Length: 314
Image (cartoon, rainbow, N blue to C red; front, side, top):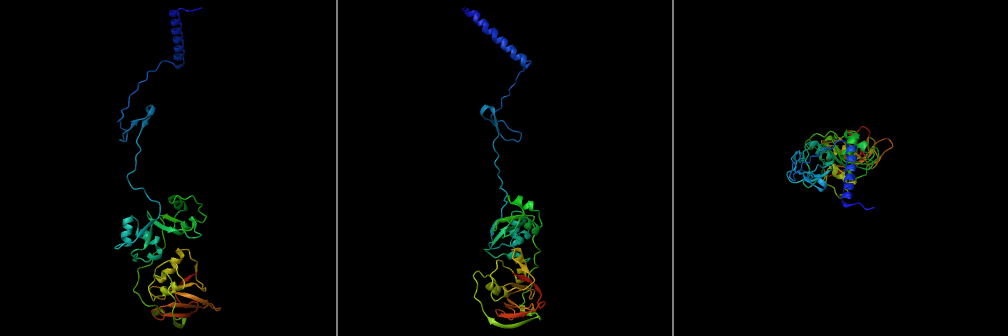
């Protein structure tokens, strides 16, 4: 049976009313929605402009930092004319001790200054910049420099276990680290002979040795000679060699061994000699320079307790 057009329209209208009634019955009383348009040039609470994206999503521009990013890495610095430890420290915003502790091999003495053209390691904050040596662990470094191991790991963003050796050659910053006490300012230079020990005997003198490559120690001095016999990786006065060697993880001790470096207080700058041999009675023979005379090499027999010994570097 066909319905007339007016009747068809009436059925459709009635159906719409019923469906709408069900909707309003389910959702409760109708709620009026008020929409406030947002201007494309509106301002956010912090003053930054915002805009409208697709489907009316609010878009806030990314804020790009304008200041320099903070560094967590070791800084490398080349010393130029006029540089002093104080000026370098002030320019970097770190204590003078941080510069010296980070370059202990050449700046261990208070008042000493770096040579023009030399390369320095600098920490970006108060602390110590260093290079890990074979066998170094984060826990060991933390104990040596009086900080917490977690501080070292976090600052350097390391994913290492604190008790496992760090890769040798890895540059590290020890934030708030404290190194050893710095040596006092240099005294007036005096020849080693003026401190000649009574517990030793000169056996002979006059020999020479070839100059080793890289020898930057002063010609004719004890340090110059010992470097020719056994090159070392630091600079500094003779008395500081023992501490420098320890800082660089060399084995040290109080017993003489063939091939070891003897470090003593036999002059105002200390004295170093090369151990040639050790005798059965505990005495040892060294070769050295600037003990008998400047630029003169001698051999000397030393008995236990016969010299103001600092220690031996193995």
